[in-house]
Length: 297
Ligand SMILES: Nc1nc(=O)c2c([nH]1)NC[C@@H]1CN(c3ccc(C(=O)N[C@@H](CCC(=O)O)C(=O)O)cc3)C=[N+]21
Image 1 (cartoon, rainbow, N blue to C red):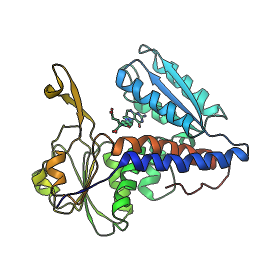
Image 2 (cartoon, rainbow, N blue to C red):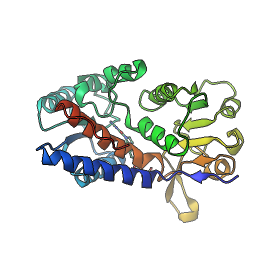
Image 3 (cartoon, helix red, strand yellow):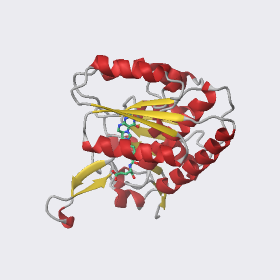
């Protein structure tokens, strides 16, 4: 079998196009959704993400507000900025780029964001809403993964899903989303016994561990849908001394020979994360103004 490649880049472009249409409609009612992104410090990878978020935010017609604080900023300074953004009526969504410098307690900052503007879905109120089946904001990466899974398998009821990784940002919300789709969900992690055997039961396998090409072809159930959340930079001697390339958590070639569908890295889950951030910002703008959320998924 040779797997269908799930083109996250194309799906994300389509989703952003539908969001842009919805934003244009809101514009005719005098509404312009706004997203504020806060970056603390100068981590080059974070700068790249923040810049591409800002570019795509403007591209769909939303207002983009960028706030950069020095790496030495105090927790109090960041909390003061979050309080200002909470109170700013032109700001519908707030994203504080993680990770944060050591002197800042990230959990405290997350909990300071108004849950109505928490388009990352990281606030405990939104995590709790997801767990209890109440509408709220869902973390962008798992939401993007679910849309990609549903692009190849509409009905997930009764399927065995295995999520590798138990982070609050990806693994745990991913498990909740799959459970809400009536999958039988296993959350595996670094202490799981016989991970390959657990994975071989999965009709849906989501890898979010951050270990380059850890999931091998022999771990995949024939016909499974494989979603690779990992973005790992590894040396690429073939491209020359000191060069790097990006690989996922899944040994792509091996897995593609066994799976029915698989996401590539790059071009899979990554672009969906940003598209879902814009989707959540649109939803935040609609909710805050009492306007119905248009269908964009
Ligand atoms: N509060 C917060 N929210 C986040 O959502 C958040 C964050 N902090 N901190 C950093 C991570 C990382 N992240 C990515 C988004 C898009 C791509 C993406 O579009 N990647 C492309 C390009 C990959 C490349 O070439 O570097 C791809 O996979 O095809 C990747 C990673 C969001 N994050």
